[in-house]
Length: 271
DNA sequence: AAAAGCCCCTGGATGC
DNA sequence: TGCATCCAGGGGCTTT
Image 1 (cartoon, helix red, strand yellow):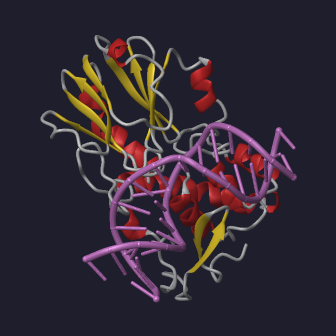
Image 2: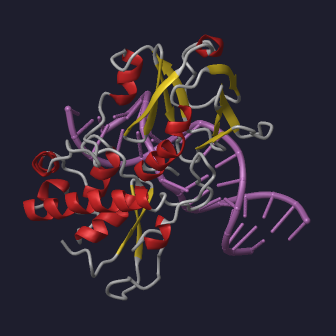
């Protein structure tokens, strides 16, 4: 479910509330993607210092070490003072003095991993190959363009891959390519500087607007306060197969790329 | 090294 | 109502 905007919206919805809080107890439910990497009891007594985001990962800096969280496809976090009893899909609880941070994840593609530091092998295995942060100053047009030049696969796949730029998942890849007028199957290496500049701007624009709208709630996403997002209402192509393109009125198309659905407009995306 | 496929898992929608 | 099939916002691992 969650792409960069949803993860960022989630972070913003509980970071202030949890920062500085003492960890009082930890409950682990069904196994997630990877084991926690430490005994749950060893987290007790530590404080949550800050909550950061890297790509689609959330990083909770503790007094000692970092708790890395990932929401996978179906994960969401909630933070509340009076949480209900854990349900069948609540697989991780971090009980703090300020409230309970809970990961709900039906499909269990998500993860919570404790690492001693960001430089540790465990952390680098997850974070080491990540590309540029699209909402930060290090997302430079030149670096983006030269990175595209070095890739031979379809531009959509390069965006999803996360090695050049992080956080762009299936929804936002479709949307940014539409806004930039680029065919999703276009070889990345053949994208012109002008198109790369346009795509770069579209990525910045779409992700920032999606964060402002609280992310996209397709099925069940909500932030840590339980609030839904509304960016899906502004989607130009994603999930709109057969419906008229909002720009040219031609029917939006659907195709498969690397086992994922790609929505696009053949009329508006000719580059 | 890069690229393409496969797989992890559950639930909801659709079709017969 | 029941059952089979397909699909879903991710990404690591294995194979080319």
